[in-house]
Amino acid sequence: MTRSLVALAAVALCAGSAGPSLADHLKDGRPVHKMVFQMNEDNPNLWSLMLNNINNIIVEMGKDHVEIKVVAYGPGINMFRKDKSNVLARLESLKTFAGKSVEYTVCSNTLKAMKVDRQDIVEFVDDLYPGIVRIIELQEKGYVYLRP
Image (cartoon, rainbow, N blue to C red; front, side):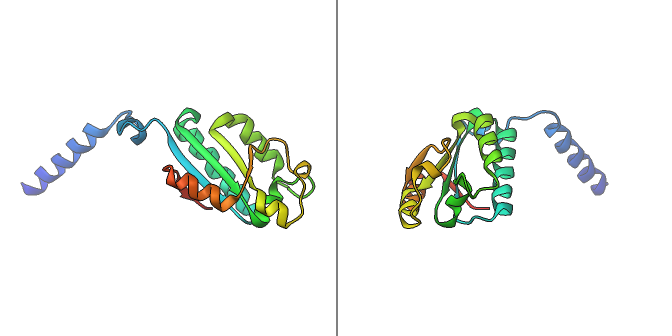
């Protein structure tokens, strides 16, 4: 008898939760999820992983419900260099697809240290700014820190 009641209660709970439901960000009233992705490596596999993650986030949450910042510094800036990157097509495609919901920052300090000119960086980069400082400021504004 007790097993039957437990089984019946489990079925009732599952039935009550069946069907479409609101995503958590809509249930708790947050219209926008804010994330900052750090990338300080020029490994194309890591960049592809990060770009896949960002694409999946946008598909699941909708581009109107996310603000995603990608901050590249150190060797990571190479993926935004016209002459060195092998992920430029994906970066540009994501930027076109996501619009203003995805923004790219390249570290201005790294540019100086590596003696890289702005014209060597692709045009669709949104900002040149000290990378670590940008990450700190974004976290202080409530952005979730992510790293692939």
